[in-house]
Length: 89
Image (cartoon, rainbow, N blue to C red; front, top):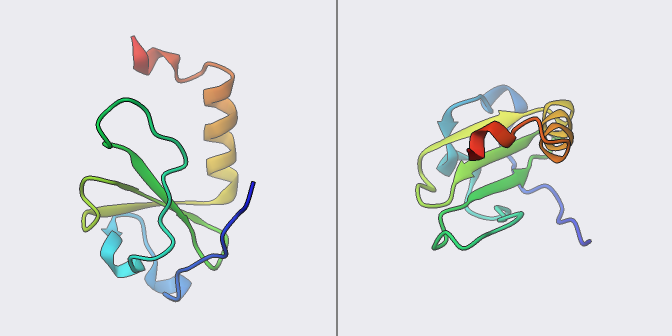
């Protein structure tokens, strides 16, 4: 899989959870997966410091949630193991 270079040029001290996603720029956002939901997806961006920003694709100017690599790894591994299945029922 081809992984793009981190795009954000915003200093780490200015990147915070809930910040306006537009402040991270418009380049570098990717939909890691999409389903049959009409394009309503999450978009993610790897930041220059290694953290991951996530935003709602239908609200690109809305808040960005910022996660560490460890937090995102735990989430993905947990989801793969079925720990988030309760969200689907």
